[in-house]
Length: 254
Ligand code: ARG
Ligand code: ZN
Ligand code: CA
Image 1 (tube, rainbow, N blue to C red):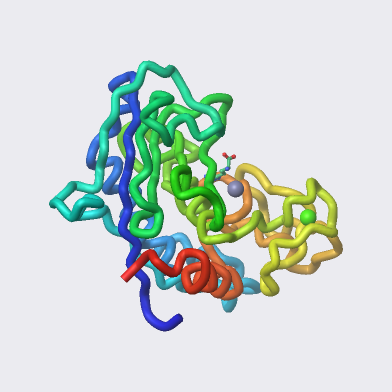
Image 2: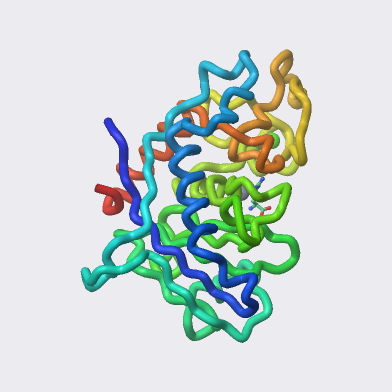
């Protein structure tokens, strides 16, 4: 898949308190982060250790707020819905007007991003390719969305959305989702085998599963570290995301 793919985005802001009704500036800051992170234009990519730097890849994806609604009328790409719900869980209620949320736009034309108050410290969650259209997209808690407004440290660099869009494009967690074992795989060849998730801001090298001397690629967007500690996708991950765009998500993008 040569060149760049542009993905139209619709942001559903589902709010109860005014803090949850995030500003256009906060939304724009998130789109800007995506356009850096998925083009390897994020300045902090310079922090990738030399041992991994040849693997850091340009995702060749661009994101833009939709300029048309599904009926082809001009639109801002932002939907604001007031809700009576204090918070949402991972049960997809936020994705339906009937359950206090906002209905998805057609997932073959748009990436749906719901921004709301998630409960229990959940930063975000995603639907992998192949699921129902009505719930397709990613959900991000407003305090982990963008870089300004209600975005709160240490998740205020927009990386939760980068991570969840990785899942939406079929990326698995870098440790292989097997707890802390060494048998799980992310089905990507150029990421080191890794035991479990890393958190906060690890120091290099962090070794698990006999993956020395370089250890875990904890600075990958698909680990669980703080926003300021994650800053790369690999070539293999980009290949997997583009295979998704050539396969189950081939309708989206121009
Ligand atoms: N699904 C993960 C969670 O809610 C997202 C982790 C994102 N990590 C980050 N540094 N922003 O726990
Ligand atoms: Zn995840
Ligand atoms: Ca593992």
